[in-house]
Length: 110
Length: 119
Image (cartoon, rainbow over all chains, first blue to last red; front, side, top):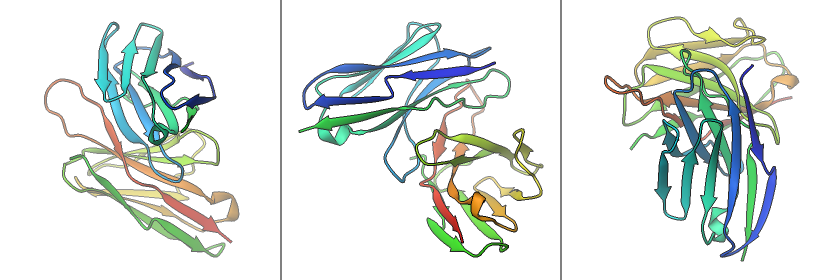
């Protein structure tokens, strides 16, 4: 059965305090792994797609990496506006459906 | 680019009535659109996959006669919640996948969501 586990469930950081979010997955025939950011009461906002182990992508203070079993979202020197829930979603091979994790709720205090 | 809109953003209705939610891709064509439901403090649960010009594919446990999906064009999909009941109250979110003729892309772009409250 396909599974996605994100940790931690919640993370509080001080502004400027770097950290990493983890996404562990077991999905058959992975086609891609997607990271989204979701603010309260809004739809997810696309951040990154990773297609193969070893791939890395960066956007401003965020960097996503991928191994065969995990993906990490590294946040460098976060700001309060980075506060959101970060969702990881690997794509099933064949059906190409996204399997969403429960997310990590990040709070960055000024 | 890759903007998806939903209408309405919020709707309140009486039990037993039907509600239609529209999902539009504004600046790209989407052969496939997806409908999700999200309950408070939970993640997104896929309800159905909608392909332009064909019948939607529903996930296990989702009643296709209750949640009617129509994908009439490459930019529009609609979800109709028929005979809505209070337990249907939720946050409904659509996504649209980029039409891609080359390398697999698969990125889904999400709409802002529709909050449904059934009284």
